[in-house]
Image 1 (tube, rainbow, N blue to C red):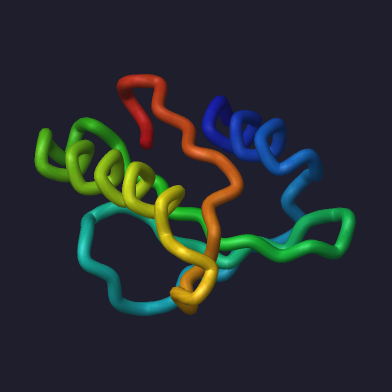
Image 2 (image 1 turned 30 degrees about the vertical axis):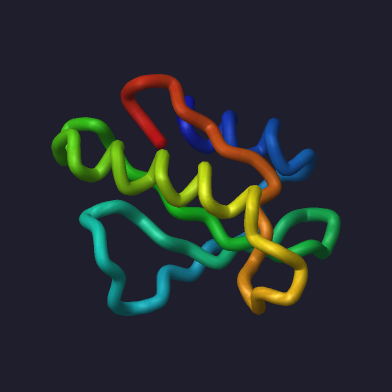
Length: 87
């Protein structure tokens, strides 16, 4: 519940539905979200319990994403949450 609230607060709308695509490179969760205001977003979440390498990978992704030039066809990060337990 704490994690759901953090996501809701950061995107500014409640989550109506979530769909997790198959695949992935980490043991975390990846999901496409539909928000109550009609926007869509993609969220990746992982627990520190998976190990230091997971936290390092998620932190690195956040650090790199903000520096991508507009010409790179990649989603832009709205926010990055890191409370030490969840990334």
